[in-house]
Amino acid sequence: MPLTRGAVTFSRFRMIADAKELPQDLSRTLGRALRTRAFEPIDRTGEEERSAGFVELDTEDGVQFAAGSLFRGDHVVVGYRVDTLKVPASQLKVELQKWITHFEQENARPPAKAEKSNARSELRDMLRKRVEPSMKIHELSWNVKTHQVSIWASNRKAVEEVQLALETLLGVKLEARVPAALALEAGIPETALAPTPELVGVEKAEVNP
Amino acid sequence: MRGDVGVDGQATEEEKDVAALEADKAREQLLRGRTYLGRELLTWMLWRSESTEPLFEHGETPVHVHFAGRITLKGALGEVTELSAKGTLAPYSDQVKRALAAGLLVHNARLNLTAGERSFEVSLDAEHLDVKAAKLPELMTEEEDDREQERLSLSDLLGDLVDGCIRAFLAARVTKSWNKQTVPAMRAWMEEAA
Image 1: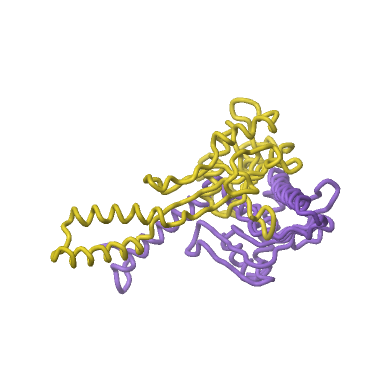
Image 2: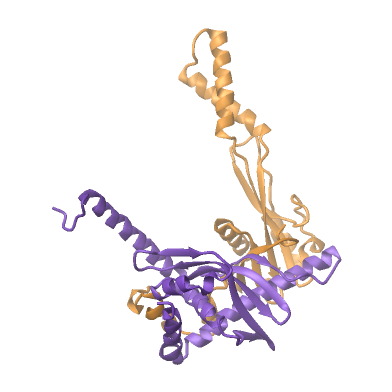
């Protein structure tokens, strides 16, 4: 886990209250909120190929979110787990071919289109029960004093998904720590943020605010 | 008749279309989320890093920056929209300066941020200012739980240092001397290698 060892990669945000104040009394409320968006394993008998939700950082399937599992000094730390279950096309193809060969031996004719389709469906269901889902856990840390949030993922889509999940969960906005945002914090007007033509080569009029 | 054509008129026309699409894409990348600010920031930091003066102070601790390793430049004009250079001294090379002078700015770089006795090696990108593949300073604590908290604190400090770089850049950028002195000085530095 990048939070605990090795080189670190994270996207940086500041938590801003949306319509209401930032969450208070976190030790009591946060666990309850996280449980509403806790990770649930993929139902192998169903059709879903993906499942995502929050988990405790120390255990990949812990979803109780007791205060002791969430807080590290001034930080809240939690995982966002994404499981995907996909039957490899090549494996399905191999199994289907075996079935076709067996069918032709038993019936002295090739299978009809509908028979083949039914077999493919049944083989897919069988393989879904055999294949292990791939699991990815993205870590999230939140300094509750400074309201800095870090999403520890290198994939941009993953960062955006975790960002949206946290924003939705707590009714807050996560503002990326980029120059435009810090300029706004400092009260620098947008008119002062046009590109520098001698460096960028793009004129002021070409920028859409 | 299609206007200007080469020996193989068909290929030349298609190349122009592809080049126009690339230029549009490069321009869109530049303007999206004001990425140009991030590129100006990283380029300004590269220029400033040639001085021994600290970039800014974090609390009372001077913070220095030094670029080392891979650097990627991007631009929205001209035939070259992206250029990468590898090598410990690559960021300070004449080739990079010539590319900067031609309108390609720093989009991604590996650099060292040093605050007092603490040094962080990190890659930054101009669009999101994400911290990538950062090496934290050696930990002082031994207990596992304490080490985790220390890593969190050091990561927060690294985030603060990146914010500090941005604030120092913005402070310079909004002054009158930005256009009158800083930018001409940066251009002169880029054109040293011409």
